[in-house]
Amino acid sequence: MDDFDNELDELELVAAAAGYHYYNGITRQPSRVMSPKGSGFMTEVLNGDDDLFREMFRMDKHVFHKLSDTLRQRGMLRDTVGVMIEEQLAIFLNVVGHNERNRVIQERFQHSGETISRHFNNVLKAIKSLSREFLRPPPLTTPSEIHKSNRFYPYFEDCIGIIDGLHIPAHVPAKDQSRFRNRKGVLSQNVLAACTFDLQFIFVYPGWEGSAADSRVLRAVLNDPDQNFPQVPGGKYYLVDQGYENIDGFIAPYEGVRYQLNEYRGANLLPRNAKELFNHRHSYLSNAIRKAFNVLKARFPILKLAPQYAFHTQRDIVIAACVIHNHIRREENNDWLFNSNEAGMTDESPGLDEQHDLQSAFLVHEQIASTRRDSIAAAMWNDFMNKWDEW
Image: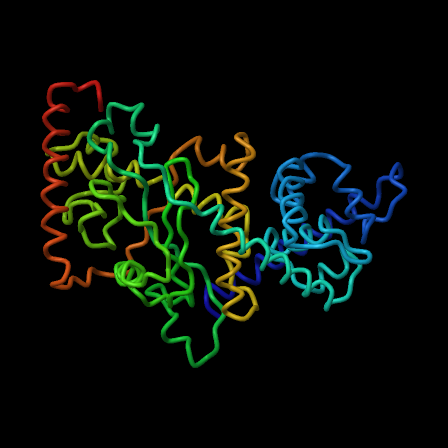
């Protein structure tokens, strides 16, 4: 049994223990007359403590009701005999928010396995259908996170977002496992994502095998009009990390130059040249997408383990999770998970699972991007040498 299997077993034990203590805690309170199962469970949580609601459904009450109302008003879901839309959504959120098995949800909501499965899939389909509305291209104006800081403005004034890859554990048939095994030896799907500096996802492309290089996935998306990747307007660009080519519209850090924020600490705090200064500020800005990934995985632990679903369902869960992530971001400025990640920099480093796979078709775009990067770095360094307080 490898480390991943051991981690899976330990997490299942922890989840089971937490569920046991939660169940006993709410059933031992004599003031409550309703059963904590089925409709009684929904009543307990909907009308109960805000913190309990937030923990069970992974969002605040008003955000939950706004999403329920949206699904009802647009006819994406409908109330059925004995299962209102709110309960259907709760079933889905309990699964993805706690990585619960069907049999656990059956007990909690007092429905058959078929009913639980049907409502889970219906909600998944409905939320995924909102992706075009909630995963939208970024505005073309300079993001406030850049404009308000003289460390980043005007140097990055044309940057509209960040792109990175996220590896999510995957459950795949034995015949496909070699393709989905990444460099860490874990079966995963490689998810290409783009986000804004306020941690909202712009684009999500799940489903690539874990062995695929990040740059290969991005090229495939750019060459496939069916993927609807938001076009990069002339003069604008995304920040990308060292797993991608430095090409027009996608600015990568300098290779062979320290980049990670933890490399700029202690005696090595100050940059020694223009390239190091550029890389440090590039890394600082790019940290936004790592924060977004952290929030996403903390809210939906199902993304940390390989769920026992068909692979197309695993892909759809990623998209639905990003839709809900954006919905929460728009509806609740003080969401506890966003706040906890904005309080400090994450220690998680961007994945460098693959090396560059440069192709001649990108040489012209690389030259344009390199010239632009050098120009930004030079201007930044000149100002930095004249204004030490900016560091």
